[in-house]
Amino acid sequence: MRRTWLIFSQAVTVAVALWFVIATLKPEWIRRDTVSGLPAAVSILQAPALPASAVAAGSVPSYAAAAKRATPAVVSITASKTPQRNPQTEDPWFRFFFGDQPQRQQQPQIGLGSGVIVSADGYLLTNNHVIEGADDVEVQLSDGRQARAKVVGTDPETDVAVLKISLDKLPVIAFGSVESAQVGDVVLAIGNPFGVGQTVTSGIVSALGRNQLGINTFENFIQTDAAINPGNSGGALVDAQGNLLGINTAIYSRSGGSMGIGFAIPANTARLVMEGLIRDGQVTRGWIGVEPRDLTPEIAETFNLPIKQGVLITGVLQNGPAAAGGVRPGDVVVKVADTPVANTVQLLAAVAELKPQAAATLSVQRGDRTLELKVVVAQRPRSGRPRER
Picture 1: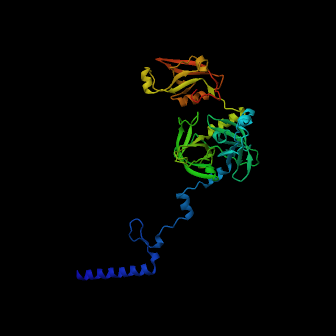
Picture 2: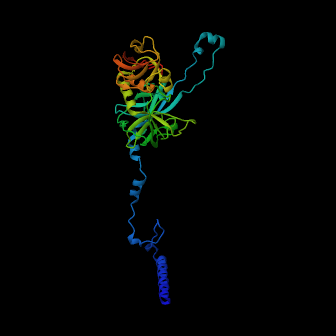
Picture 3: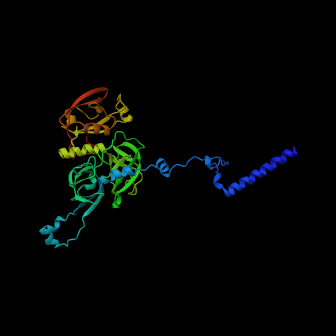
């Protein structure tokens, strides 16, 4: 037994000495298992290291290609408005009583925003509020070229404006598929925030179909947490391939800066508005002349209605299309043509899609009766009240 223990002790001593010699003279022969912390095989058994490019490509995705594809088509817009002079200074009686008033040199009011080139012919999309009331609109491309823009048309109800510039070899952005966009998709916001120059920020689609925000009459926003700040208005919201998903239009903010809640007009909506403005000079929408509100469970119970969803008509414009078709206050609209409507936003959208001068069927609930009423749709007045459908 003693002899066995002596042999074991000598063997351990030799092994430790050998280990010490190797660790001192050839440390690269020995590696340490990063998981268990126990000694492992020598270096010849290590797995080959991945190239740095492969590690970077696999673990840190880059959207440089998308940004490179989209940014040339995003422009900076400078909209200036000449200050109005006081008309009384030219009135002889005013001058008689008050004398000649010194004329103060007033600087023009300047607003900054962004835009997106969507046609090789020079058509641009931006926000109506970017160029509203402007006397002069200047566009600067990312390549340094500048041009004065012509306002083709505006649609305040969607906050879309269409401009046109005359330059050669214009970069054009491609329209993406808004219908296939999903919450969680990566998006880039491109614009000119605070006038510092073209900037790209990234985020995800936070929500789709945002409405009832009180921003526009027609609302169907893409919500994103990509940083959008003043000056980004009218810029592009693009997908991970650099295709246009929306026109950045508004932010939710208590400080004036980005708080991670931005809203963009879907590109398909902006495109329809653009086509209408280019073709007709205005956007053609249906209108029936009613005052609606959402049907709540309390209202349905009060009126003993057999339905739980729909749009309650609280007022009908005298001699309007709905009144001529037999719609009365207290009716609940549940369907416009073949489109079910459960709230005022859906009613507004469904009516707007109807063609003026065409007949449409409204399915309404009047007490315990279900009626089908024929209404001849009219053209939506451009100056109509936001809540009037």
